[in-house]
Image 1 (cartoon, one colour):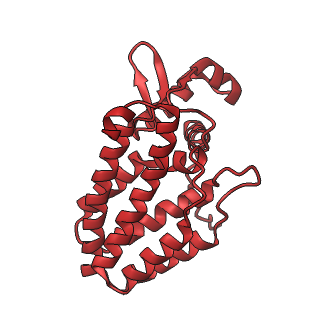
Image 2 (cartoon, one colour):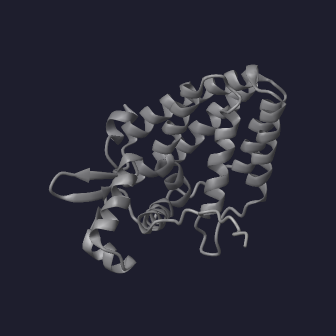
Length: 237
């Protein structure tokens, strides 16, 4: 009798499920900047052990979404205008450089990847009925920005750009969830970046990407200044 070969499919661990759930709460603005994360309360609400929750929180801390405080647990990162400005400068320099590299060296497969990623972003619902940004749109948005740079020859440059964007993820979502900037047309911005990239217009695409990054920052800085978040006086000087 011939036995049918079976393929082992890895299962999502409980810590990964908790990580995804807590990350979505963070990105939806349900947990405000600087809020203390009470491990026992959240573990009870999620119906998991504190150790599982700490594992998920440690991963979120590594991505810069929350901060670990010695002997005091975890908290949502602060909305710091100085840190946001620094991240924005780093992203603008690194991502535009990586985009120029992709335009110079990307092949047809890369072009197809950019087209597919942009199409998915266009067709993915932006918000839930509640008004919060959907996790599916966030994933499509992250993939689009990654694919823009994926045609370059330097894997390290692309990895650094991805890491900088991950560090900015909470700021990016706060600009949508908290600042509620209705003056922007993000879909049109993405369309312009994709069009110029595929047209191999390195100067135009880099400028459009830089403006896209800076507009996100401008909306959140305005919100932060209105509420008096840290560093606003030094940043405004």
